[in-house]
Amino acid sequence: MEIDEEELAELYTALDDVDDPYPMWAEGRRTCPVQHTLGAGREDMYIVHRRADVETVLRDGETFSSRINDDTMGPFMGRTILAMDGDEHRKYRSLVAAAFRASALERWETDVIAPSVHALLDDIAPKGKADLVQDLTARFPVQVIAAIIGVPLKDYDQFQVWADEINLGPRDPKRSRAASQAMTRYLQPIVEDRRANPKDDLLSDLVCAEVDGRTLDDEHLYGFLRLLLPAGAETTYRMFGNSLVALLTHPDVLAEVLDDRSLLPAVIEETLRWETAVTMVNRETTAETTIDACPIPKGAGILALVGSANRDEAIYNDADAWNPHRLPKPHVAFGTGHHQCLGMHLARLELRVGLDAVLTRLPNLRLDPAHPLPQIRGLPFRSPPALHVVFDAA
Image 1 (tube, helix red, strand yellow):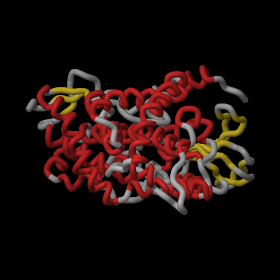
Image 2 (cartoon, rainbow, N blue to C red; image 1 turned 90 degrees about the vertical axis):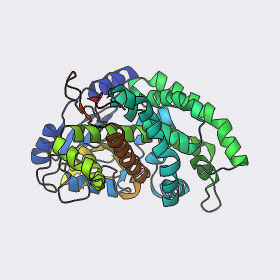
Image 3 (cartoon, helix red, strand yellow; image 1 turned 90 degrees about the horizontal axis):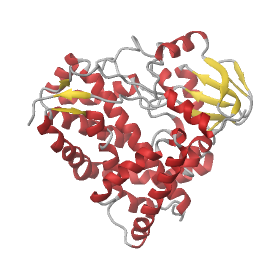
């Protein structure tokens, strides 16, 4: 089965308008936990709905390969660790993992994350109303990542454009590839400078990191940067928007959080479970296998629905409700197994600092009654397209 880029673009554009997939996934968990269908470009695709089965797929990298991500992401981001398996993945993950150490996160909170969100809020606070997606959440994470890499402040807006266009991916392949190439050309002299004159920033850490005497070659370094800048920023901005929607549509919880900011970690974890930014993960079988007694042939595509797994009623009571006071249980919003998200601690830190800053700087924050209620939409990425609010102008 072949599918051309124009057809794929139409498919992904349609997925952006998906409203609420959760009833469909709940039905899948009840009646067809492993669903056979036709996937784009392949004859066999199996959709996995239940939490236990999703975890099996994500934890067994030998049977369920990540190589399939080269098909979907490779044309736009190049070679990334998300498409690697086994020893290759372990080696390159080790090279970049050191850059996300705890001491770096602590420094970034003070030097980068807090100043970035407050600079954006400086422009918003005097106005008394805003679209928090356009004015804040879509801009903040890109600026954070650009800053920790060492991109000059004057070029943040250009990085925002490139990140947005790379993330178009199959929706607009021509623009996505062009943005990827432009960002790589921009980064090349900065990378060469860091190799010659390392600084105290993430890019220097990546350029200089060694495992078994090896550093990242250009193909893998730029592949990681093309993944980190747009993809890492996109997931965080979507989770920022989802968290704000949850709070603003639950004013009782919002009032509690305003009085007690120690509740923010529970708000973030519950939002990650309830409306994760990335709802599905691709894998490919390397051999014949079974999932929940369903036979799966070699070479089949697997779509592991982490969004469905996070609302599995076998794990969570009243799973469709957003309730940050529920008894904490692990979720799979950041995946699990050897491909668990490297940037998950950075994402949590950005969300905590960002939410705290919004609640502090925008007093009496509430939804704008002049606009419809916000909706979280889309597949495989979910977030509100807009979030219109009003507040007391500073």
